[in-house]
Figure (cartoon, rainbow, N blue to C red):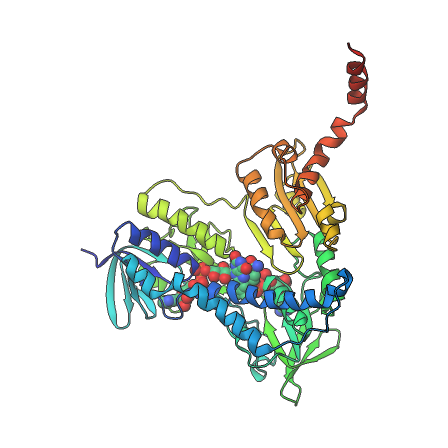
Length: 477
Ligand SMILES: Cc1cc2nc3c(=O)[nH]c(=O)nc-3n(C[C@H](O)[C@H](O)[C@H](O)COP(=O)(O)OP(=O)(O)OC[C@H]3O[C@@H](n4cnc5c(N)ncnc54)[C@H](O)[C@@H]3O)c2cc1C
Ligand SMILES: NC(=O)c1ccc[n+]([C@@H]2O[C@H](COP(=O)([O-])OP(=O)(O)OC[C@H]3O[C@@H](n4cnc5c(N)ncnc54)[C@H](O)[C@@H]3O)[C@@H](O)[C@H]2O)c1
């Protein structure tokens, strides 16, 4: 008999969700974790980044208070207290992910690095554990690009940037994606000089350019230097304890710290996958859409490390949770399960936030939708946004010609909070009339979603034929 029913490598968002479910069903669960319980999201990702952004936003609100007739002195940043706030947020959430909680649920938590030694066996801490089923949830690590000179300068990643004893004087960020932009705004609002170097022609290159333009304006207005379409040729020490980044156009940017934010790499090394006959791609563990390994049918993968059917990873905590639900269905109940990213949300948690659900206009065209309906509602037409002095932003909907919602892009304060509405519309294939006919509380930003949907029906409602019909009907007794 196998030692365990389910062995799980990694106690991050994905592994913990599977472990909690399997243990509560009474299965014998072994959960291997070599680092901190909670993985990236709790310790080096979502939680510290959102906590740092929260502090930064308070500072910005203090700076902007004058617009509302409130006179405040310029905010003073107590970096040690900001760090304590970040650590406090982690500490308050940590009990949910703790060893104690998972032991109480019935799982055995093994604090050691795990690797495969056979198709049905793992070794950790010099002990061998056999399993009936295994889940690889080892996550991803920050990618380190091959940049000449990088070995000669100290650099930060998401694993170290939240540990700085003092604020960076001038933070140079390589990569203008989700990590780069959130960290850029957090540090700029906390009083640091910030330069973002982005290789693609635009920051947030996957996102809708109309929305990115609004975000770019905000970031620049806050003093963040954006070097877009810039190739970094090399980095070198500046002789004063900092570094210089030399771009292909010859310009030299001198900073005190360098943060790498150029994407993620799956943590495959050290798992000894060949020992268990588990195939992997450059992007992660090769699985089918039920997240089951294509080559070892005892094994599933979940979270950042999964590469389902060549789709590549979607490195988000909500995706890790969604993967865990699919693994539970497929692995524990042997029910059909199929990953579907059609209604997947993603949010860049800057202020304003940039939220995307489903396809952007460009993604919809690339997917072969030749004719599209494009509906827009600017935030400047939303009463709440105007009242709060935040008219910068846009709701943009992408539909089929018949009005089925394919994607929604929103730039607005707390845009992510609108994502659920669009996710439900797309996921349940609800007609656009459901959104246009919804009665929403006034005044809320979400009314922008309803008004954008209304734009689909307005030209039809006010057509010459409808006007003639109205004229006729009003004459009837
Ligand atoms: C700065 C930053 C901000 C982010 N913000 C957000 C956000 O706002 N919203 C969002 O949805 N997502 C966000 N993400 C992404 C999110 O953090 C990840 O998608 C999520 O943490 C992935 O969870 P996971 O369980 O797949 O992997 P992880 O959280 O990385 O967990 C994997 C665990 O496996 C352990 N492990 C690895 N190999 C072994 C081994 N051989 N033996 C034992 N243990 C092992 C690791 O120590 C780790 O604890 C952010 C990421 C970063 C970097
Ligand atoms: N709010 C969130 O949900 C959130 C926040 C942070 C991270 N994450 C997750 O973590 C993942 C990783 O984030 P990330 O920002 O590191 O990756 P990313 O893929 O989102 O962005 C990386 C950026 O770096 C650029 N780049 C790549 N190589 C470069 C180079 N040599 N020089 C300059 N620019 C270069 C890319 O063009 C891209 O714009 C995200 O894709 C996301 O899934 C999510």
